Image (tube, rainbow, N blue to C red):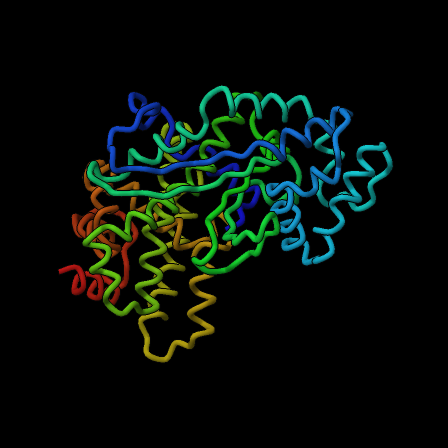
Amino acid sequence: MLISKTEYYLRLMFIWGSIFPALMNSQTNPKFNVSLSLDYSAAEQYIALLEDQPVSTQQIARLRGNRIAASTTGLISDDRNVTGNLLNHLDSLKYHQIIHADIYHLEEARSKVSEIKQLLEELKKRNFSKRVTATVEQIFPNDAEVSIDIPIFIVALGHENADAYVRRIIWHGDSPEFTGNDDGELTIVVNLSSAVRYGSDVEDRFISLLGVVAHEVFHAAFGNYKESSSSWKEYYTKPQSPIDALLDLTQNEGIAYYLSLEQQGGGYLPHDWNDKTRNAFTDFNKYSSALLTDTVTNKTVFEILRKANLSGYWNSYGSITGMVMAREIDRQMGRESLIEAISKNPFYFFRKYIELTEKGTNLPKFPKRLNSYILRNSE
């Protein structure tokens, strides 16, 4: 999943000290084994080039992190030749020649090399990977079994709209094969040249990066946890309908979005919060009703699910609806209820919210048909 600049800024922080201040630097569950392998080589050698040190542009272009970044740039730009052009662009940068169509934003990186280098050193000095894993662990049940290894490539070049992203990769030597299914290794890429655009100092930028990476690691850990959870395995043994897919996505993205929201000013809400969230619920109710019909086509299902999380931050109606649900469950029922939702299934998550709407609150509600479907399946 590619993260836009808007999403990158709005996600800023996943769970930082304001939510779990005493637990940030240690893991408490020995069964929660999330290993992050950070590869800094692409950023390190590229920074050396930006500083006019004697380095090989061929070697820089061949590094795994830069190969992924170049491929992703081509994917976004719909230009298959972009990957092969990276070496030529690096040569132009090395000899201070004009770079036409600087799609990797190499010149921009050169102008910000000191900030990029400072941020890279901050990641190394402050044990970035352990901070991310300790952060993510806090929202899982105390007995959650999670075991996953995630390579993270730190780069400093790429498309301006690809700040941080996840790709599935099968490596053939150092040649990547990008897959659209679970066959490939889940891999995270972070572009430091984009990260330095956010925040006024290195502390802000470090926290921003932590939040973005933690968001993606949460999804990976949640998926892995489901594979060992008896309740989730039982849930997935049953046939999954289009509406089930929407409920699943809404829970997954909603909890992650809510945790990001909590960090921003301690849960500060934008002035148009009510309008934007109610618009999301309006769309959710419309699209969920469509998915509950017998006549919905596969093409329509695909488009409805795509819009739920890939329509820009506030227009991703599934993610925003889930964020509101998670917030109200946490505020009115307590953190234990929110964490328990991780150990259950989407029907539990939705049922808890429905219980809140039945208490005479002014919360947005779901259609009766959807309520009935959820309550019937959560028994």
